[in-house]
Image (tube, helix red, strand yellow):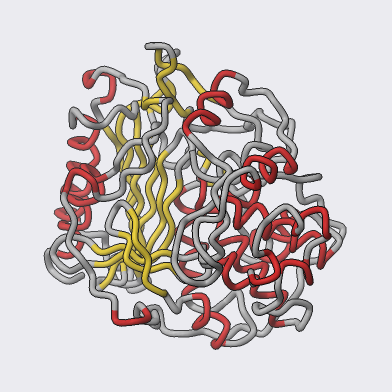
Amino acid sequence: MAGRCLTDRTAESADAGRTEKETRMPDDALAPVAGGATSRAVDRRTLLVGAAGTVAAAAVSAPARAGGRATSVAGPSGRRFDPRLARQLQRALDNALRDPSVHAPGAILHVQSPKLGAWTGVAGLGRVAPATPMRPGDLFRAGSIVKPFVSVVVLQLTESGRLSLDARMPEVLPANVSGRFANAADITVRMLLGHRAGIPDWDSPALDEQVARHQAKVWRVGEFLDLAAAKPPVFAPGTSFSYSNTDYTLLSLVVEQITGHSWRHEVARRVLRPLRLAHTHLPAPGRRSLKGPHAHGYVELDGKAIDVNLDPSFAGAAGGYALVTTVHDLARFLDALLKGRLFRHGTTLKQMLTLAPAQGEGGLVGYGLGIERRALPGGAELVGHLGGAVYRSYVGRLHPTNVTIAFAMTAEDDPTPLLLPAVKALTGTRR
């Protein structure tokens, strides 16, 4: 399960959303991976698989997952979404749920670009019992995709002069937080954003199983910090890369320390409302229920498939169950981000998208400030972010096509059987 953490309250906002001057950058203005890292093709079976953990994906029979529906929207020119491409994408969805390695009962796939228009397809079940078909607008928990949202808030604070990326932990966090970690005096905000601090991850397979067995537990941020602080540093600050949810747990505290508000409040005020992401929410700890149509997430525990609904406190700025959203809102967010709409200055976006070499499962070759680059077979690349924690989700920009892709699966599967055929269809004619 990827990501989690604290905090006080959900974004209730007494503050009006600020109006900022927009700096629009070209959609393809993505910085190259620093250090000349080369993209590596990866095996189809392990493209985007996450850490296995002891809580396995739930198995649901293929017949229960068959079928699908789709919706299409024309592009700005009024051109109808290519029906042949729509059929290929729907086939990718249907076939993915029939793949023996996929356990998710259902999936949603959304693609959009100015040239293509928009298309959303679904397959399988959004809920197993009672059997409920997946719907294009279903809400789901997007896991670590919350990290770019948090990164935007941190970078906006640097633009306003309230925070420096080179500030060190003792300068921006109280002693009872920074003092828990060795080398804190050498760890900067920039290192936390890019997973280069060397701070160990508080997450583990054992913790994931504990959470699945006690879904209603409201977690305190101190519990996660204690778990991380009990482990030795992974490396000296700034010398390597290691994905760590603890980095974003700490960043949530930095945001709260600087602004006096919860990180949820600041994400809502600075990102969700300005972009009119009406279907994206950050529930407060203790608020597990979801209103409206939503997809359920499944894991296998003690040999049985269970419907999981974790408390949002096992989430927070690192991911987990903190971010409730739809594929359409995720695509809208990423498109706005890459156009520069969330920053005053184009140089801020450039910093975020300067991807230093990174290594990880799923063809990870670069990580910037809350954003990933993944290399795919055939030379295509994705820039965006992967999410886990019961569901599997993703939002990214596909290069060289400049198509935005967002998907969600109702178990934390390797999405390779869905993503690779979809990418192949989208890159077939360099759309």
